[in-house]
Length: 178
Image (cartoon, rainbow, N blue to C red):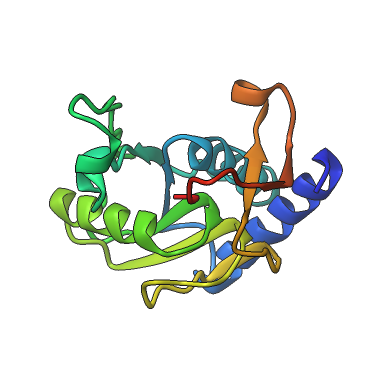
């Protein structure tokens, strides 16, 4: 997807989230660091533009909840988790990520989220669903579903980190994708 395709997908995803929730009133968006945060911010802008309401937003750093923590080294870089204003209790929390693959990242995000409270409901929104799960986790809202070979990865680009919006399919080296 180029920038225009990403923006169209995010606009549609924002509408779907509002429709599934029967309005934006109780929504809170939580982006998974790193690129999920930027996608959540774009979703928030779309919802606020269309609905005229402020949507609380936050971010999750799942580093300490990963099941491969020992494999990423003795000193993992841990970022901040920032809860939306008002917390997560009794809210419809939408976890936002860039790419859904094995489901392990989302599992870690759910574990962390539950440490902070008890949402009314949790939804999953991803820009790209590449399939081939290892965990029984499915998104509620998807920007684009694609088929990717086992030796390929999906890389999403966001302006704050990569100077552009988009996604690319790349061939992996001998290392596996997260």
